[in-house]
Amino acid sequence: MAKVKLPPSRAKAAPSAPSPPNGNGSKQDFKVKDLSLADWGRKTIQVFRAGNARPNVHSQKKYATSKPLKGRCRVTGSLHMTTETAILIETLVDLGANVRWASCNIFSTQDQAAAAIAKAGIPVFAWKGETLEEYWDCTLDAVTFSGKQGSRTRRR
Image 1 (cartoon, rainbow, N blue to C red):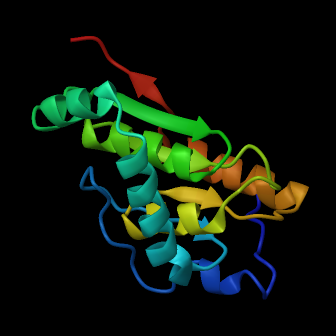
Image 2 (cartoon, rainbow, N blue to C red):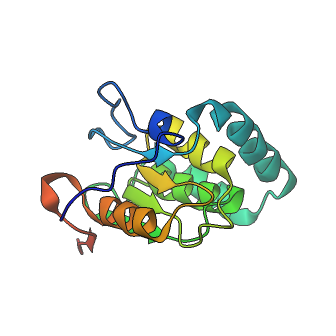
Image 3 (cartoon, helix red, strand yellow):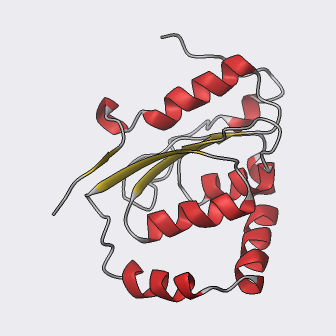
């Protein structure tokens, strides 16, 4: 399958240098509108977490050190790329899951949230206003893990 070339207005979104490793130690890639929005996205994530502390946050901290999903879970997500979704993605990574994400709605994507996830080293393929062709290219990128592997879970 041929790759879709990003329009010039999106070209700055593609990484130009080797990508840093993600939280699971593997190379990552991303396609976001503007990586310079990452700091804004990080601030919105922090504000949301502070204002919406829930009991699951405490459980997350408890289990994050043992990483119960490490080596057992590859997650491909396709959901609205919002601040709330960014928190879900980071929770899965904190628990040890290998995560790749694409937005399911080209109109609801919060570019700053996508940029914050990309800057954190988590593969994300989403920007507001993707074309249908770009959406399917991003979906393919999200479901393709290193070694051409797909999503999986493994029992102990």
